[in-house]
Image (cartoon, rainbow, N blue to C red):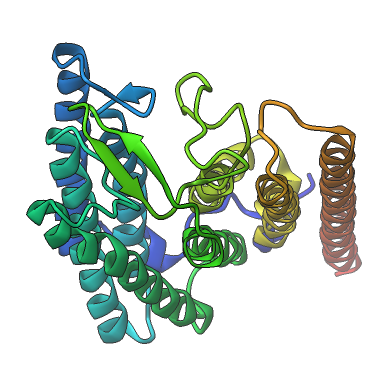
Length: 351
């Protein structure tokens, strides 16, 4: 009877990942996530009873989207900071600052939505509320990015957790950091002075926009991404949520390892996570390039389609290589275990 080597036993999360979340998750980030989850529900109610629109969508759509995105991310960060074994104190403070800045940022967006006016890029100096909130909306982004960078550096020096989980966390945080830097890039590199009309019929001067070609482009179902020009919200979204994609993949691979012996080695799962991370990073790079060229995600040209195809091929090649290498390693491990067992049996017979 063949016995798999001990390294290939059905995996579990590393000791740090097995700890009970009760009392260990970052409390301030959890509170922030809970508040944002409540905001999503309230905005859903607002969208059903309030018919006001702003730039082509319900006034409550923007705080709902921000609330949902940051609810996912702050909850993920709250879980992640509980797994650290180095730099815990600094990471705790960075998480607290991240939670406070995120609450202030989304809170300011919600206040402006309730007032039926624009939040980001609003240059209306005749409105005292807007004047008070503009520093929150502009400086808040920078504070969030700095806190994210601190957490990212601390995560890089960790040595706990399995290879697969570590790879997912590090690649995911790298993507998330890039996703948070993208808004900073488009806010400081291009100026699009113009006037828009808010939900109250008031003309609002604007100094910037989320789009290239059409600064206020919109129109795609659900996301309201631009159909008339490039839209930097697209790479921002994909990069910010890459960490959730990679963590879900890691959990799925662990679950599949119960049926596929070659996945029981965390190095095999780490190879697959790395391959998917390569492909996902390529996707973020292509949609960022597409937005910077002023091209709508709904209307890719031949160059963009070729870039997507190249990313798909590279990602597929990396995945196939990871599978082949891992299966061969597993086969060698089984053969080695069988040889050891046979040698033991021969010694017993000789005795």
